[in-house]
Length: 340
Image 1 (cartoon, rainbow, N blue to C red):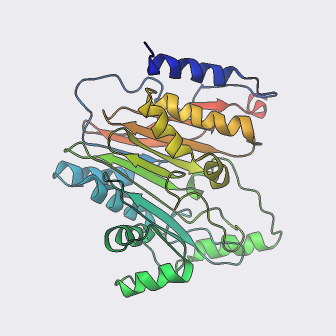
Image 2: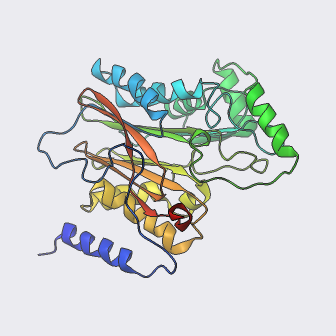
Image 3: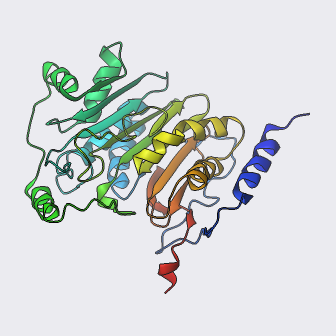
């Protein structure tokens, strides 16, 4: 009899054993945080409610989300309100107000949201609106569309009561003017304060939703849109299976549709971490990955969670069983320079 779990396990091992010249696999983690290796255990009792989000600012998002979840709120409300707290923080340079501008000095925002029914909303190339996640939510709830872009997205936001404001803070403006002196574009690996926040939650009813919001790569070309507003790339939810989300260089996430891939791998028996690892390996095998970072995060229907990254440095926050903790994701490559 065909066993999908055994088949998948063998497929994963086979894919990981394909020679990647010059690569060094490494799952040793940094600092004193726990790792996601074997962090979730098989259980007949689902872990719920649970909130999980990327990077250190994920802890703040989790606190907001968990309060909603414990009050019998819906997962979709939890993931919207959770990331809004990060969008509203002017000290962050990767999301919402204070986001790093494009090379012409404009802060442009991307976001998407997806609920347990498969409904989705997204905005891209949106300027002047602090909470793109809520614009995406309104697109999902009140229009027949999934994504609005640029001037159209702004017009929709203004018509629905969102206020336009200047999102370029003094700090980000000064950094941009400093960048202008050389105009060198070189995205840094693991610049934590310059990356997406993605969040997934399971509510007390066992329903799953997710969100993603970002100001994108700093000093990007005018009009550049990454993976963050694209369903199946930055975020995918299937209420029968689980959900996955991404952070990092959007171009390679778009080319591999990592979040959709992870959910399909979990559908076929992979654990969240196994699925995230395979999605990373698709990037490793196809692209020049040594100077980029991508991290994936996933939760299955039982509330088991896991993550995996291309490089050292990706961490994420998990709020479950009364504890909101930060965890280092296992990763594929350790830079030889770190050993010197």
